[in-house]
Amino acid sequence: MQPIKRSRKHVEEEPTMAEPKIKYDRQLRIWGEVGQAALEEASICLLNCGPTGSEALKNLVLGGVGCITIVDGSTVQIGDLGNNFMVDAKSVGQSKAKSVCAFLQELNDSVNARFIEENPDTLITTNPSFFSQFTLVIATQLVEDSMVKLDRICREANVKLVLVRSYGLAGFVRISVKEHPIIDSKPDHFLDDLRLNNPWPELKSFVETIDLNVSEPPAAHKHIPYVVILVKMAEEWALSHSGNLPSTREEKKEFKDLVKSKMISTDEDNYKEAIEAAFKVFAPRGISSEVQKLINDSCAEANSNSSAFWVMVAALKEFVLNEGDGEAPLEGSIPDMTSSTEHYINLQKIYLVKAEADFLVMEERVKNILKKIGRDPNSISKPTIKSFCKNARKLKLCRYRMVEDEFSNPSVTEIQKYLADEDYSGAMGFYILLRAADRFAANYNKFPGQFDGGMDEDISRLKTTALSLLTDLGCNGAVLPDDLINEMCRFGASEIHVVSAFVGGIASQEVIKLVTKQFVPMLGTYIFNGIDHKSQLLKL
View 1: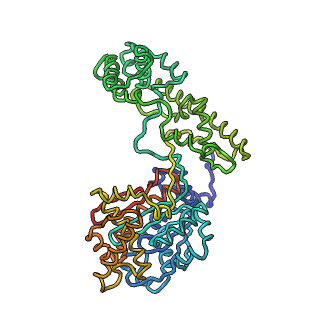
View 2: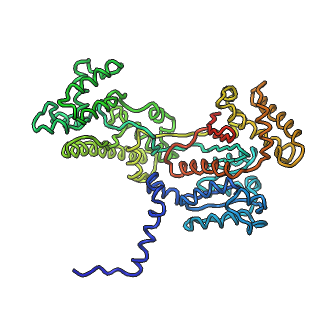
View 3: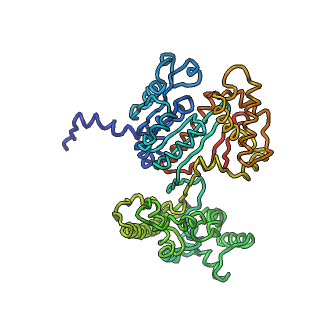
């Protein structure tokens, strides 16, 4: 046989083609190639590249985000060398955006990095259309007025926004986007989609071919899959209980005893698995209340402006009401279990065939809806529909209040509840004081404690400002601890690197969730309390 000849070009190119998989191997195991592709296609804008912004962007650059744009009009000062690892002594006096951009580019040369030497506040005011080119904007160290303006701009342009701030030993992260649907939510714990309490005809037929009383050969009884055991036991129970499955604690115990009674010997792992998995029989049939809420949403009535997600939800609604008989499309996978190879493979095929049949029905329904609303029937790809079907029971939808709404009209009840709660009072106190510090800065052209001298006066002024803010929010008579107010002034609006790194890390994690559309991003305002070492979400 002649050896295969390979051109030098082929040999040289191969490592390059494999490089992304090697470079991003660990994270590919978490969010897969689809998630990595989304990151590599994303364009991220960072406003202000102090330590908080630099740390957030560093994590995304290392993760392989496609393009970054840094906007910062300041120059590197001596003080920056103490809290920002993305600048050095040679950078002093130079553009901070340019210096940070160069350092970040060194970390990953496959990222397209650029910078703009301009004050973000000026850009927000004078050139709002600038932000429409990005997938997501990370806005760090903005004051309240700028946050409100930027949120309006990003929502209008349908650009995701993550607001981040570190202030002494306190930190703040807030996501703002009209709507964020998640197909692959990757819950930590979720019930296998086995339909033990609602088997379809093909699964029933397969189960009927297996005899639980088999004794020859001796190993046969030990290798009946627990899925078969539980479907048979559920049917047996239902026959003697007017068609009902176990519901009370006593009935569930009785059902497990029934399963145990079928064991021939004590070493039958398949029956032990069946007893442990018996709770899957007791699970309610049909879709969850969360998925039901989704298909009842007004957006599930598809129209020409509907996103791909809502078109598929509309198809899911039709499926559940018709072919699904109250159930979502089957996922099609089964867990490991004690079984003979033959039984396991046959069972696996039955689940896969059912899942494929459900997918084909869903695909047809999606195409029909797209035709109906005047769109290309093939505009939603097969892999997208397949992923939707596989994850239909785990769909999530996040909707976020406008920042302006939260700031001007928060839930007074929630604020009062948090202030009165010993566990949350610190987080709520920092939330109020961060906003009070912005009011303070607007009135006195400096942040409390920012400059030497006049600390007692700043403490008094900050306390008055905070009480005024609480009154404006409808919390008359509410007070904040003097110690917290004193600490806020002592912070002097500084960015401490260790806090910036932590808060920036939290922000970058949320950015990855938003860009990959995997995992569920934070709902609410995240507050880091470095004094008490607490991370908490406030839903206001």
